[in-house]
Image (cartoon, rainbow, N blue to C red; front, side, top):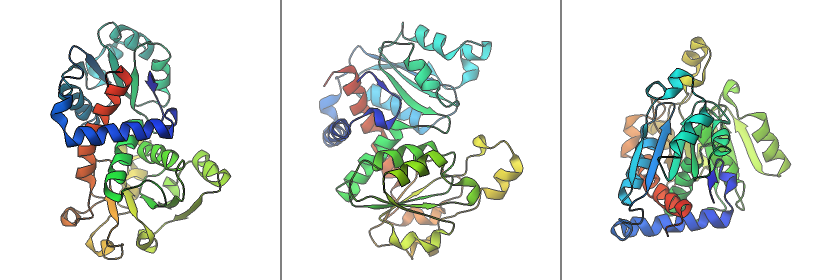
Length: 303
């Protein structure tokens, strides 16, 4: 495996291998402290990120490797008009593996077509975010014990949320998965995902009120309404507070439901929910470091 652009680039067997390796690393991280000695990861982030960029860097440093890169387009030659293809071809001369985030859909695929070294899509616009999906799958498997026969609810921005699109696609590959999609009409899932769910015969429903469906969920995946994806400030302001998860709504949920969120959150989860043992989004963030350690090892073939 040399390129990871979409979760569908991985077979379910490869996903299982990555998650199992991540589990082993979490249990004994010191055993993996020198697996990437002498290796260099380049993090090319053309748009802002906290968790994804730092978890990639933490992952590589934890494996004994080194990191170089930039955290915004303005601090790279992209600000001078350099193409993505030229940027990655240049950086390939300095690094063994590349993780790239870009605001435009398809940018990661363009980059992958122009390099020979391993390349990981760290998020491209509202399209795909495969390493967040691996993080989500690891979190679900560790907390629920399995990835099949689950009802998973997605709430908030389902139109532009690349984490939502990636995780839905990944969960469609497991048996007995039911989807509940909670959003205002303006932020419903794209037609191509709805068409895939319909064509695959999946059990899914779309609702506008979280209260109407939260009691059926094993997992609630909250998302923020993303200001950076809107062309119109008025639409953003109108929709940003569409869904706020609070203790009152949590009382309607199952006792063993888990709440996930790819973060950052704005106000879609009240801070009072953080005290609820079902709030697992910071456990989810922790899983991100270890799943990226496992993925880097797999892609560099240093297992």
